[in-house]
Image (cartoon, rainbow, N blue to C red; front, side):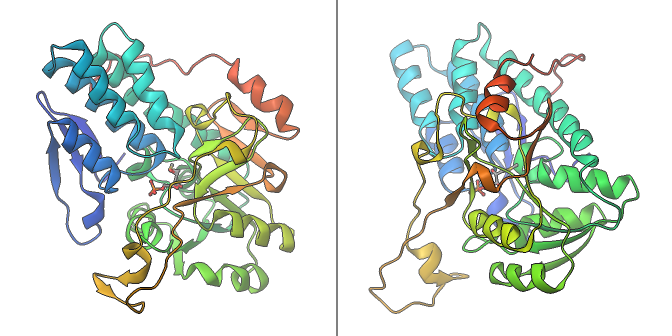
Length: 339
Ligand code: MRU
């Protein structure tokens, strides 16, 4: 399924692929301490909402095995839980492992379930993709971002495998270039035709390139459908509405935060100035430039045509359909955990 193995249990460590080095270098690292686990998440060596959740689940299971003192264990687990604020999958996965009888078995189950969930998302999203669809997307939402088969990119890959010949216009995703570095790489690996474009080219692409739909992932979805995702997503949704193009979100149920009512309750991570004021390690803005660097934005639910989830397609009115989603049974994994 995956060309890479973004996360794996390694006996006395959590093995992970350092995504900051892609596409030029494939380097696996081993996280063994809370500092390693927290550092990998904060630095975006591991990133993408579901993948962060799987990694954190293994990380907390590792801490449970290595720390006998309950107080210290809970303190370190809460450091992992707070490493990034926006993607709800992180807190969700840590809470699941903390509540489980066997932390490692639960982490393995979360990983196995993610693989099954991604397969269901890809199957459910397939019907939304017309033949020869021209598709805009942003950020990276493939296997690297989920530790399974991907969400939005998983749907696109399913369309490719189903001979629908999608053509993708992939936003580069400034400032950290997850679109250029990671999504384009995974599109190539899957044999999907794609143009890489500057984020600011999305408007003219929708105006002149016959775009049929936009599909992206999510980091947290409120009960009314307001959705946090990579910075630039909200702009795409507005552009899609202006051009009459359907805008879809593909996300697992673990990305829905049923406890919050609206998007303005979602904390938005702001990252350091250098990500914007420098490029490829070289400063591009004048010394002293003040920088606003939100890592995510929130797209209002009314701009979203539908959510593709493992439980099916969720449509408006979201204040009814999203709370209904919470009541659906969890995806069950038939085979025992092997990761
Ligand atoms: O900052 P990142 O790279 O972790 O942001 C990732 C995204 O915004 C993805 O679109 C989202 O997590 C969905 S991944 C299937």
